[in-house]
Image (cartoon, rainbow, N blue to C red; front, top):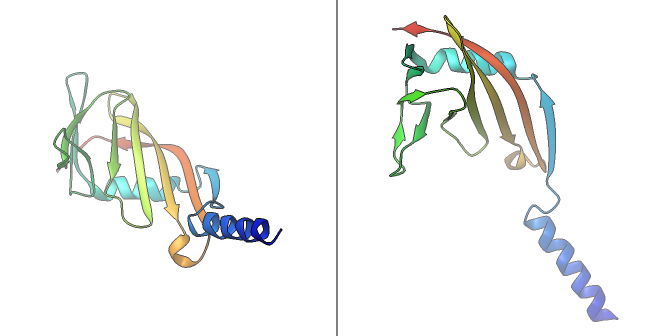
Length: 136
């Protein structure tokens, strides 16, 4: 009986220490304005190119190539994804939903991990924003 109790307590503590009880809170369009501002601040140029768009960022947005190197200049078509440089708390993934004559519409999923602040919580916000073409 004592062995069973010990095993149960040990399993509970192990799951708690490994994030087994981590809670995810999902929202829709709560951080839309912040994501729009983030994209505007870090997109250096966004121009139509063939069936897609050419994007140049300041390095905070990009994608990894086949060798795992971060690319801040890239070409995207409808359905392609790019992301923010992740840090220990936050990350965002963007997907081209639509290419219009003067802008692109992207969906986003932004994640924030609160565990460093003593909370067993990850918040995930999803939505979409438009980015006008710009050449700087």
